[in-house]
View 1: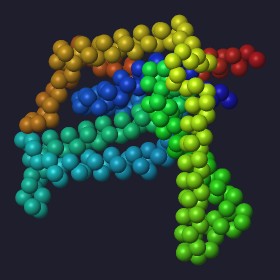
View 2 (view 1 turned 180 degrees about the vertical axis):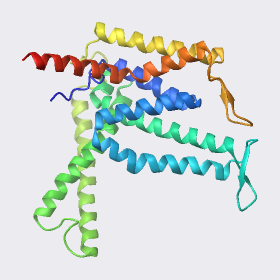
View 3 (view 1 turned 30 degrees about the vertical axis):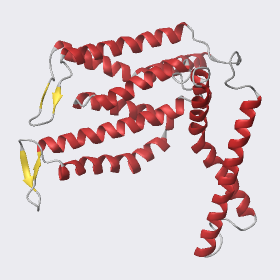
View 4 (view 1 turned 90 degrees about the vertical axis):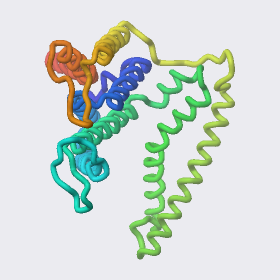
Length: 298
């Protein structure tokens, strides 16, 4: 079964351009329809990439975070002209503050979901390729930071299995012994991490990383397909920005709810944002369809 992500297979500059734009839109635009589009496609792409793991994370982490953030805002923000109820301390709960809290919660979940996709698509080698010649030190740090959590998880599993073989895992002994074994495993992990960082730095220095005139091998090539996808992203982005400057994206929560919902220009702009968010799934579904046709002919 094919597990290749067609969007992740694009040129790193196209991947980075896309995530910068969609994450920026998620953070800057508080229009409810814009937030709904961003959340829908961020979660859809995360589930496409992660499967059951992404669904489990959404139900156990994202959904409670969404509810908590949405309920927290009306307790501290009492602006708005539509009073729904009064808290025991006498402060009003307004419709505007409730809706703004829901909007802020959706924005937070959307950004987190997009960043989870970003972390899976923008691997360390892509960062080094994009920024290795411009900012070599920073690109190396970013590459190591992106690899930090996955490598830590893999290494701590190796250490735990080794310690379990000699009866010193966190599952062995009483509570005090389990804590002692856990601290010992953590100490081994930290020692490994420090040693690995020194070895990586010495290795990169020995290879002349960051020196002027240094050449590097790369598997990435910007082809016609990458150019077409980049033009697609820029065209959708230009339409959205046109809507921002024309006022079609206008929406306010305070003092009363007011904003643009209808109109030909507004529909076109939200359609452009919808198509922009759908890009990874469009590419993947297209490639899935082509693979299915090829396999059916074998």
